[in-house]
Amino acid sequence: MATPTVIVDDLHVVYRVYGAGGNKGTAATSLMRLVKRQKRASIREVHAIRGMSFVAHDGDAIGVIGRNGSGKSTLLRAIAGLLPAEQGAVYTSGQAALLGVNAALLDDLTGERNVVLGCLAMGMQPAEVKERYDKIVDFSGVGRFIDLPMRAYSSGMASRLRFAIASAKSHKILMIDEALATGDAAFRTKSRDRIQELRSEAGTVFLVAHNLGEIEENCNRVIWMETGKIIRDSEDVPGVIDEYLVATGGEPRHREKARL
Image (tube, rainbow, N blue to C red; front, side, top):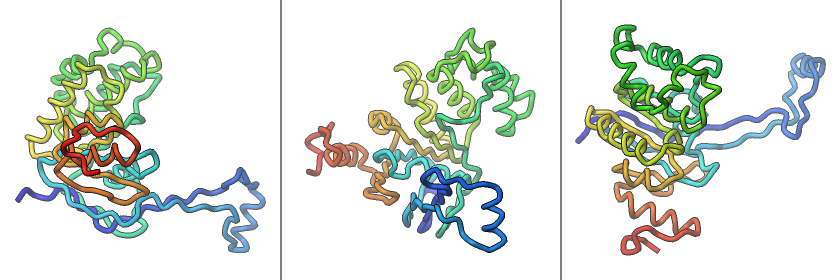
């Protein structure tokens, strides 16, 4: 039995949206509410994760699928410790690194400086950053743009650079949120190979992608989410993908495996 790396135990995550309907109020009205111990009138709760439980192990590459708003990104942020649990808990065997389309890259700095700062932020020593720099740039495929400010990059170039930086270090737990969506075929092949390397190094990978082909190519397990709950959690990745496609009005990829 492989060693558990992530345990999600009856996890609930609730967002509280203040000022719904555009009624932001003023500083004076806010002060009066505090003095009178009144709650804000316009508050809305969004129950994004509803009692999820599962265990991930060393070597797992878990694809997380579901429609927009199903809670996929929220789940990854909760595992990374970026969102508090309203109820339940998340236990990890190490620091979870979240790589998403909105991962921080500084627009005013060059790609080169972002590579250096990103690697230092992951805990690399300066000598290690220098040693790995050329390989990171080559993997990203940004070429001569590495000397230009990030604002000059296309979304695809920025996405590839984020992945190259994050995957330069072996992570016990790496979560990828749509970061491969804009890569070309050659980059997707390199990314798939790197994900396999991370798994072989006893790491755990979570992958959120609307491109179901990426899930099928990279993952040995899939979690299908809807409205913050797990619909299916299975190692039959093609079968679950077919179920999901049928449920969402699409055509199954593997008709002989589809459970209609």
